Amino acid sequence: MLSQSHVLGCLALLASTCLTTASPLSTTEKTHLHQQRQDARPIYAIAHMVLSASGLNDALNNGANAVEIDVAAWDEGWWADHDLRKDSYGDSVRDMFEAIVAQRNQGRNINFVWLDLKTRDFCSGADCDTDIKHFDDCAAEEKCSIESLQGLAREVLTPAGVNVLFGFFGTEKTRAFKTIEASLADNEAVVLSGQTVDVLKIYNEGDGKDVSKRQRVLDYGYTELEQGFGNCQEEDYQTCAELRNAGDARDRGEIGRVFGWTSTVGQGDLVHQLLEVAGVDGIIYGFHKTRYYDHEESRAAANDIVGFVGGRSDMRMATNGDKPW
Image 1 (tube, rainbow, N blue to C red):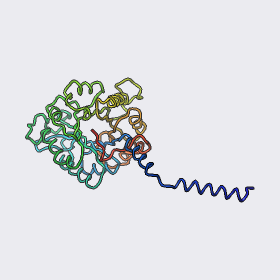
Image 2 (spheres, rainbow, N blue to C red):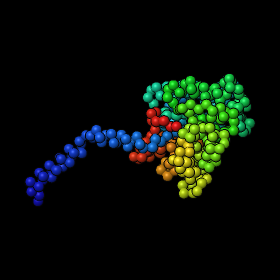
Image 3 (spheres, helix red, strand yellow):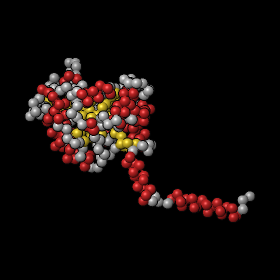
Image 4 (cartoon, one colour):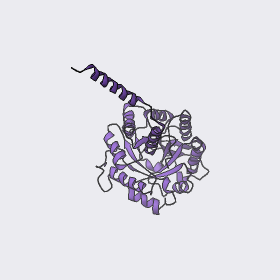
């Protein structure tokens, strides 16, 4: 049987331990933890195919801190549209931009907008909307021009501190690309899709050579992330391996950011490999072929990114205060 003095001693030790544990952090300790957090790599959960103000709100509620908007041009201007069919368009780009600013003004976390530029060439079939323009067919002063889109972003998004990423999927030889390349503002960047060696060649020797390295972004992936994902150990071609190679190029200072796509529900393991092994800066997530809306699957896909990052000391979700490029 324990003696009374032994019990009292143990209680005293326990009380001392509890008091020590409960002691507030010193200023030095707080500063150290804050610095650790700031040094952690900022990660972007980029909501896929956000085509309406309601989809934007759903994405932000689910944990997105950036959005990808597919955009196409008509004579009247630019609209959010992915499929380019006669009834597939969403809100006007102006309405989307104003909704983004309204969300920012309410304190929501939305760091950048990825504008995935579409042309009528991306659609085939009898139900394609033939009124959609190729942006290179539009003169600078027309509402369907790339100048009009960039001007709209600068009018609405830039004053609110929202960054802009212009996505040229296979269209880097267009007048539109050359226009954007020659006129990038500090908060703007361009993204090219493809294998690392090919994209680097465009940036270093081809049509993108005048883009500053910090404003060069590379993306790679498939609509179905699992297709051709690989095991992250291949030399190239497979999704994870190519994004790993792109991450190495970023670490050498050749490009600014690397993004993968498109993750959906049940792909947490692939997401974790992209973040941890390939070292991507962000992932487009959501549905494969459906515009973004709140659903248990879109919530789960968002949480695959946000939840994993939340459990890491070397990563953190990017905020409005982060500079993506």
